[in-house]
Length: 111
View 1 (cartoon, one colour):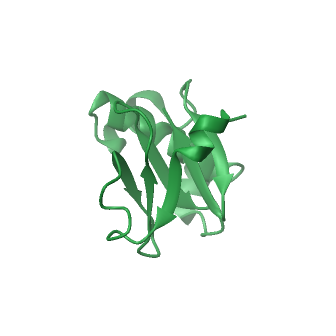
View 2 (cartoon, rainbow, N blue to C red):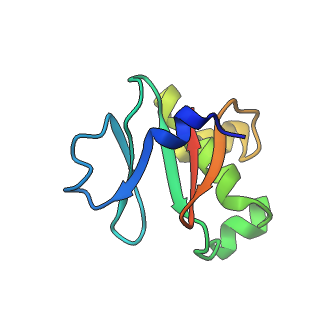
View 3 (cartoon, rainbow, N blue to C red):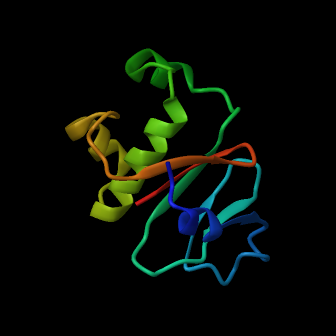
């Protein structure tokens, strides 16, 4: 379960509304999730109800896909590694200390 400070540090809005966020993750619908906590944190977010791409579901499974994906994206961002490289080397279920939560229809991971 995410810490209350993590929930308080996240906001969803337009890019203009969240321009001052410490870091941001862009959503498929044009909104962003912004982090307003301590610097050095990485986040990733995806719309929770968007379909899982067929090829990715076939390769990695669809169960908790967006949670697993956002945790892996956080690791890729932290390690400054392209997601394709991370997937090839570690797969989608590599251990991660990222914490995942659901926020207004958005799956967000924080690391």
